Structure formats: structure tokens, C-alpha cells
Image (cartoon, rainbow over all chains, first blue to last red; front, side):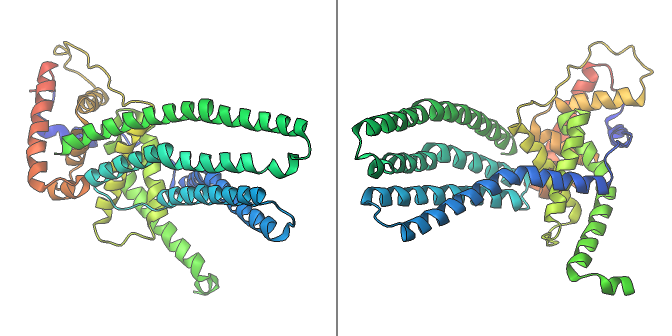
Length: 194
Length: 176
């Protein structure tokens, strides 16, 4: 069919594709950014709002027990962790470094490792703070009634058990399997560059 | 002149950016499409990759510092997006090449091109990128800058890839 020397002319003989014009692409860019960033912006905003409201509650509310104050503080710390994690991720999404392919593969591999660390450590730390906060918070308001205490703590503990032993393991298993697979594939491509 | 005076600094900056982007898009989108097509061998996915590439170009145009040639910068973004496509669920399309086609002499250019894409799609990822850039006519030193390999390494690899492609072409009776 072709002499290999003719491959370049064959390659360039590809008919021009119907790509959107620059103005249409502008619209896509707006939609793309909006969709990708919306959830992260929303998460950071809600987390910051909760921190502000919690701080105001600590300052303004009177007669709060130590257990309630500790619950609010722990919740604030959890929200700060959540906001910081999402801000870091947003920063990564907005900025783009001028990487060569090999450097980019190393960067992706490191990013995947960071994500696995997030699921193994940061998420556990955040959930621990929220769990402690959720257990401490109702204490002040239920000490008058044993029945109410049993009812509320049954619901709270039930929810915590579901969160720790059903939702989180499923989510962790799904993400870590995917990320491990990706790390493996990136490793195999990096090997090609050696 | 009066129009220019009415525009705020921000609007002028945006208009300049839009003009630069428009010109880059017109110049490079066909080339980027061919490189992406060489990598994924799928028309629709290649189009998506072109769009993702230029979305990244638009977002980062203001921050481009001319440390490398603009074409190197754009090819880097495009090929990195190709490598990133691995993160998505769909795998790269590897169409099985038809056997015993030696008898077919009067293939259309489209068929010949489709065969070339199939042959390239059968190569490992880095080789797909290198040969696509080579076929695009980029100097080997620029391919080295894009991929992060040394120029010597790129030259050796291009030689090997051409040999691999020659074997594939011969196996299918498509090589003189």
C-alpha cells in the first residue's frame, strides 16, 4: 500500500473534522467550568458558613455545657478540614502546570496516591471528628428524659454505625480499587518512558 | 480609536485573549485532532479531547510565559489529556485489523488512513504519541520537549516504531 516515507502525507490527508468554532467553544468552556467547579464551590461555601455560624453560636449562646461547646468545636474543625481539602482540589483544577508527558505521568501518579491517602487518613480523621461531635452535641438536651436519651442515641449511634461500617467501606473499596488500577496503568506507561 | 478608549482594561484584555485564542484554535485544532485521533482511534473521543485541550488552553492562556514555543505548549496539553483519558472508564479503541488484504489494491485514501490509525492504536501509549507527533512533522527536539524524553531517545524510538509499523503493514500486504 504505502511506503513508510509516504506515511506523513497519508497522515495529513485526513479530512478536516467539523469542530465547533471558537465562539461555540467559549460557551462550552463556561458550561464545563460551571459544572466542574459548582459542587466544590458549594461544599467550600457551606463548610465556611457552618464554621462562621458555629463560631457565632459559641460566642452568643449562653449556658452551653462543655460537651456542647466541644461538639461545636469539633464540628468546626471537621468543616475546616473539608473546606481545605476542597480548596486544594479546586486550586489543582484551576491551575495547570506546563508538564512534559513524563512529568505529567509522575504528577498523576502522585495525585492518585494523594487521593488514596485522603480516603485512608483525611476522610477517617474528618469522620472521627464528626462522630465525636454528633455524640457530644445532644447530651445537654436529653439529660432530663431517659426515654428521649435512649431514642435519640439509638438513632445517632445507628447512623454512625451505618456510616462507618456500610457507606464508608463501600465508598473506600470503590475508589481505592479504581485508583489502584489507574496507578498501575500510569506505572506501565512510565515504564515505557524509561 | 474611540471604541478602544471606551473599553475598560479588563475588556481589552479579554478581547486580546479572545483574539489570541481564536487564532491558536484555527491554527492548531486540525493538528491536535490528528494527534488525538492517532492516540484514541475514535473520531468522537478525539473531538472531545480537542475540545478539552482548548478549554485548558483558554484557561491558561493568560499565564503562558513563552518559556517554550506555543506549539510545544499546546501539544503538551493535548498529549497529556490523551494520557489522562486513561482515568476514564472507556478504554482506548483498538480495532482488530482485517487479515489477508493483499489483494485489495484500490483502497480509498480513507481506508488507508483508517488502517494507519489502527496500526498506531496497536502501539503502546508513549509510542502512539511519539509517532503521531513525528507524522505531524514536528522536529525531534520538539517531540523530546513535549514527551520529556531525550532527543536521542526520541530518534531511536521513532526508528523502532517505524520498524514495528512496517511489520504490521507487511503482515497485511500493505507495504511496497
